[in-house]
Image 1 (cartoon, helix red, strand yellow):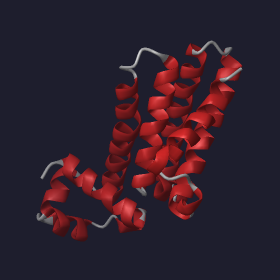
Image 2 (cartoon, helix red, strand yellow):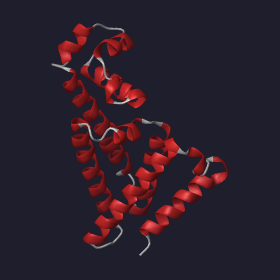
Image 3 (cartoon, rainbow, N blue to C red):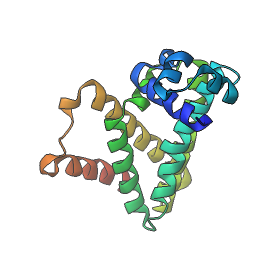
Length: 183
């Protein structure tokens, strides 16, 4: 078992039951290993939670940004980013679970780092579209709040959101993004 295996298992546990679900013995059982493996990689539970939150940031922020950066057109990058982020957040409860536990100090610190990175990246995309820096920052922040609201609704009241069938979701997303990208 690697430290990354433990961090991934902790992320799964967080998605299922929040930070309280990160417990060494159940995770060891899930991984088919012993507590000794845990202590080989981590000094304590807090270190595991920190590693899991770092892994979340790497996968769901830096990984997504790297994928999107392959697209040269900024409008298409924004659409690709939102399609990927919203689809992922709707399918996986982890982001909403982390938001619900954002008062926990480790989660709060990770959320602050990730949110600042995401908003800065979005602001850069809007600047690439030609918006002046202050407006690009405002639009980046607004775009991020659209994403968070959609993620929350996707878990709390999914029936309110347009379905994937019949192109409803695509039309909804295109209209929302067009409003954000239009002067």
